[in-house]
Amino acid sequence: MGVMDGKRGLVVGIANDHSYAYFIAQSLIAHGAECLYTHLPGDRMKRRCSKAITQLGIENPWLESMDCASDEELDRVFDKIKTDYGSIDFLVHSIAFAEREWLGFDMFQETPREAYKQAIDISAYTYLAMGRRAARIMNNGGSMIAMSYLGAVRAVPGYNVMGVAKAALESTTRYLAMDLGAKGIRVNSISGGPLRTMSALAVGGLSELLELVESRAPLKRSVTGDDVGKSAVYLLSDMASGVTGQILYVDCGYSAMGI
Image (cartoon, rainbow, N blue to C red; front, side, top):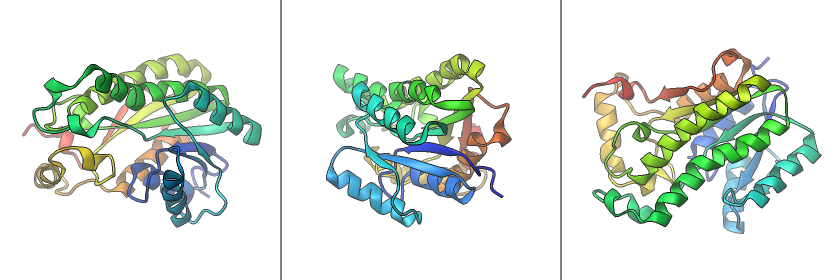
């Protein structure tokens, strides 16, 4: 028996088989969960997401297009989940966005207003927006997680406005946990170490950062998708029944080091 047997939930953020969301879904499935999926609008993004889900061994998945910047789109997707399944037990929010041109070295000070607002909207507000809708169709409690990064609490060269957005995401985690706790719903985030994902490749100096982590982290390696996937199962399962409003660092110990 798996710790997620009988549980069903929505996974948002699979772009390909390198995505954190992919590894989270992989671990959830291995532990008995049923996953529903969304993809970014467009046939190209649908093909990418479908290919990754096929590699998970899933045929005929529940897969819907969703523009997370649209409240109407969010309503449509969560209403469809309710119609098709009645309820869910968990939500995985693994999306973020910032214009690439503002993620270079010494570019934070140049960030324009609209790019700043967009990064916070897509990377942080959407956790609140999805969480609110997910909570309405969660019965007997539930659990949700989002993906953060150390740049939320420390200045990481090149991470720039994304760090500001992740700080907002982590604060959103705490306030959402406070509001939803009375319903038995737990809200947490995972602060994963750097991984070569599509979004991470937009950040300047990624290769140098990975080398730094490998040399200074206590485990002397960078985090893997499997590391994060296993931790996600813990937070989404009943094993973490008393854990909410927390940011769990899964980064091979790098965040614990002073230098």
